Image 1 (tube, one colour):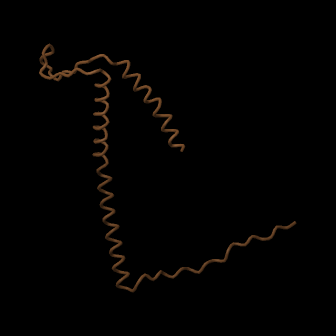
Image 2 (image 1 turned 90 degrees about the vertical axis):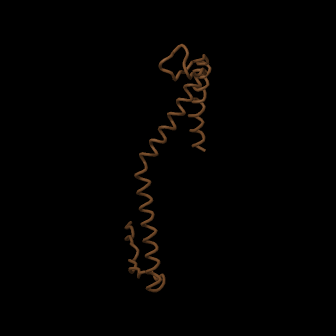
Image 3 (image 1 turned 120 degrees about the vertical axis):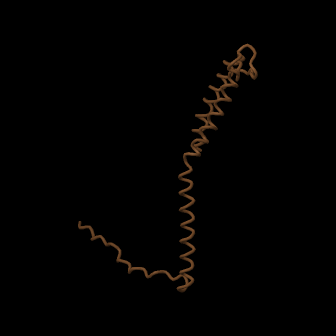
Length: 122
């Protein structure tokens, strides 16, 4: 419940800011991919400014996520290696248990008597 409230407290103002940004930046902007001809570019697109900003923001999030994924490859590789090692050790343990007779538990040490507090004096 608290998580939903915190999410709402973050998302509602964020949506208000995004809508205000979109309304304030409705004018058309031309993006050209031809550095040699500004008058007649080979490829240009005219979109509202907010659409261009949103597209660039989405592309930035995707590129950043991909970069983080690449940086974490070391940890994923180590996890796979350790997982395979644990599985091999479990298989070896199961083979030893079958070879040496079942699933006997090692002897438990004798339990110590419970701690007794002396009676309170009046």
